[in-house]
Amino acid sequence: MNRLFFVLFLAMMFTSLSAQVQWRGDRTGVYHEEGLLQKWPANGPELLWHFDGLGLGYSSITIEKDKIFVTGYIDGHGYLYVLNTEGKLQHKIDYGREFDDSYTGARSAVMHDDGKLYVVSGMAELFCYDMQSLKLLWKKNYAKEYAAENTKHGWHGPPLIVGEKLIIAPGGKIHNIVALNKTTGEMIWSPEGAGSMAGYGVPIYISDQQVPQVAVMMSDHIIGLDISNGELLWSYPHTNRFREHPNTPIYSNGMLFCTSSYGKGSVMLRLTNGGRNVEKLWEKSELDGRTGHMLKIGNYIYGSGDRANWYCIDWQIGKEMYKDNTLTSGAIIANNDMLYCYTQKGEMALVKATPEKYDLISKFSITIGTGEHWAHPVIFQGVLYVRHGDSLMAYRIKQLTN
Image (cartoon, rainbow, N blue to C red; front, side, top):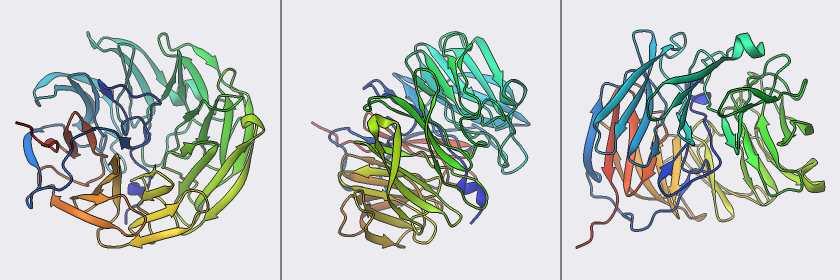
């Protein structure tokens, strides 16, 4: 497998409203729509439309009401596309040079909040646009402003938005984690020496501890910082031979699950002392998640890895419930208790989320588009959106009513 598959597609957000979908829904990858098909026709669900001409890229879409946002690469430049939910192009703007060194293409999903769009290029630049006018409001260059080095396969991973704070993890020699004012781009805090260099990880927000905090996987450590001032609360060593950790951590009820590949695998931490410290609960080297990410449903973790294509793991104790090679590994999202697995070979599978077995219900092939099948699917109002390189497809997956 190519190393780039292990280090693409990170992005995040911490809220989800009925009228908007951001990275992996509410960042967990688990959606909660009603009335979706429990089985698909043999040739797949109905294709409503497809839009071609996005250019090269692996970024997933995000949605705000009736607007779809996605990025793509054409002739050295990155473009922000705005489509409506009927697949019609509304706007296309050039945001500047885009990454073309290792697997050319746009990487990062577009974040939106409070009437603004946030785009991160593979060249490690952050752009803030007005959502209505698409006027550029401000931008930040990670190398120039934070002394950050670009990652081997191009920067990716949009910021975390918590209230007025826009939190990024450039991993610079001084500015490891930075909180910006989401409106003005001005720095709110940037603690020195809070962590190591960037490892493809991006921050998540943990709100239910005595000390609300940001947690992120850097190149050599998993760290937690006080959201109010950036103070380092705890640091846990976690690295691998390439110092790359592309998966977003999963947090639930005081437990933080972090996974990476290249021989390191996964670790489950428990926050203690009101979130000021952590302790290891279990680790599992063979559970080596890729950028397809993992997700939690009930008391189980579902996802794909390197040594086996699809896993189910007990959340509490790390016990392997199954590993299955029926389909190749890939990205995973879920709706309630159904898994949607988008494999590297372009198969879209509907799988029952049960710890008993990899219960494959339906599958079909994605035949439109170009390049690698790496973008994460999105579910929104009964439609499954799948980006494959140059093309975006919309499939009806909701049961029609009379």
